[in-house]
Image (cartoon, rainbow, N blue to C red; front, side, top):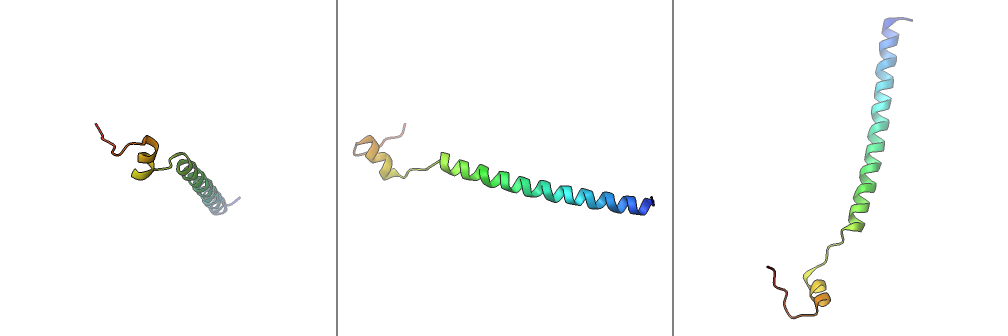
Length: 60
């Protein structure tokens, strides 16, 4: 086996592995962001005020 062929094959394999890891990391990132959105649902002032049932909310 020629050294040039070996190095070309090595570069090809490393490139393919890098692309596969990048795609996997992207999908893991998207699922983590989706879970974070579902877990963290921000409420506005009016929703919190209705839950408390008071006229005003004072922060300490």
